[in-house]
Length: 144
Image (cartoon, rainbow, N blue to C red; front, side):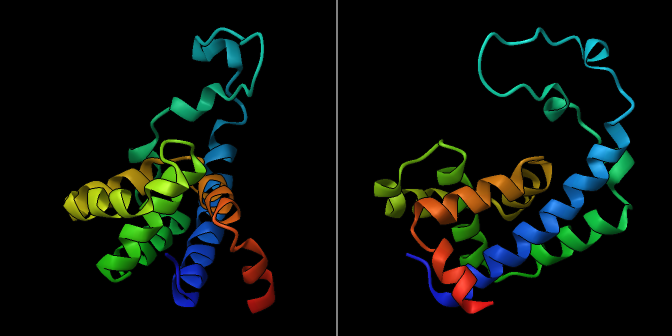
């Protein structure tokens, strides 16, 4: 599963992702929900700006550059595990499918893993929730 180094790296990437999300949110804060063309859901979370692609506006932003370099600088096996944690945290995979999901991550090209994580506006939340679901969030607070 996850080793202490993996957990520390996931925590660091989650913090960088939160900073990047705050930059993204500031760009979108003046856009009205009505302008995004999304109907208001009857139940559940409503975040119509989640699907707005801002790649060109954010490519050179320092928070996104730092996040991209941090993810790209990780060893491939840790990057694979990071992707698995996001999949578990986002509800796409189950904890019991850990080994299969790690194999799936290893089969993905580096570019796809990086593009997924950088393009995921809720990366921080998915990582934090994934770590919690794996039962290592307590370990994180003990390490700090």
